[in-house]
Each structure stands twice: as C-alpha cells, then as structure tokens.
Image (cartoon, rainbow, N blue to C red):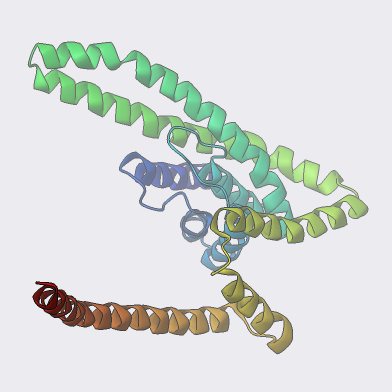
Length: 268
C-alpha cells in the first residue's frame, strides 16, 4: 500500500505540475486517468476509467478564477480507487465527484496563502532583489506541488482500506443504482456542454451524429472519422467561398466605378 500511495501522490504531482505551468491539459480525466493507470501498472483500466470520467466532466470548465470542480484531483483519486479496489467504473465515478469538490476547497486554501505572499514579492521587486524574488517563487511552487503530493499520499494510505470496507458494505440494490447513475452522468456532462455550444447551425450535425450511433450502430471512432471528413469539407468550402469573394470584389468595384463615371458624364 505504501508504494501505491507514493505512486498516486506522484501522479497527482505530475497532474498539478501541468496546471502550474498553464493549461497543458494534464487535468483532463483522460490524461489524469492514463497517468495513474501507467504508474499503477494498469494502463488500460486507467484509460477506460479516464474516458468515462471525461464524459462526466465534459461540461465543467474553469472561467477566470472560478473553479467549480477540481476534476483533475477527482480523476486521479477516482481512477486510483477504481484500480486498487478492482471495482466497477460506477464506483470510480461515485468516488470521484465528492473528491473533486474537496479539491476546490484545498486549492482555495493555497490561494489564501499565496495571496499573502504578494507584499513580499512586491518588496523584493522594489529592492531589485531578483534572487530573493526567484527564491520565494521556487518556494511557492515547491509548497504547491508538495501539498498535492501529500494529499495524494495520505488519501490512499488512509482512505483505501476505509473505502474498500465501504464499497463491500454497500447493498447490491444501491450498487445497481450507482451503476445506473454512472450511465446517466455522461449524458449530463454532454448536456452541460451543449448549453454553451447549441446553435441552429450546429443542431443538424448533432442529430447526424446521434443518428449514426442510434440507427446504424456506429462506434465513437466511426462518428469521429465522419466528423473529421465533414469538418475538412466545410473548411475547404469556406476557403473556396472566401477566395471567390475576394476575386469578385475588384471586378464589382471597377464596374460600379465605371457606371458612376458614365452617369456623371450624361448628367453633365
């Protein structure tokens, strides 16, 4: 268990390292789940659980300083518990959601501490003490990564046995309900995404993808392949229309200018 806790802590550190240096996509459930799966020696299970969690968190986005859910943390722990407990994907999803809420609280506590360092950063800049500024910056980054590593390590060391006992004590009807809920949550994630993307021009493409899966039993890979082909055709058509419009504009301008000159001649 000690080794697994260290590996999960390392996975969480890698994921948060990507967040520290910008939006590198390390917090996406597919990436986070794959990282955990590789480190724990179960890459296929990590990818499958990450893909299921990706659909759940599909509509969750961070706007400015508002982070509704830490789906990176939730994906790390959800995937880790799913692999270590050898449980169903529904259990991983059920564990991931509340943990993602906890991650938001932990991050806010770090932001309070980091904000308190701003006067010290400003003092170093006013004193032109760049070495002290860089040293404080490295300390801040080190505390950030160490905080997440500790959370991942302690969460697995203290929580795996308790979670295992909890899962074993769940009655079968409730477990069946979790399985049904896990099947519904991806639809909720897609619906949240469609709220922001829905448009009359995009609606036919949405129903086209739905029809391919529902009527022709197409897989996601087949739908993605057809979607790429359609996107290329639409892009090529738009480029052709722009090219034709650019070529037609000078001719239309010249014709309009000649007509105006002719009218001025006869009016005079």
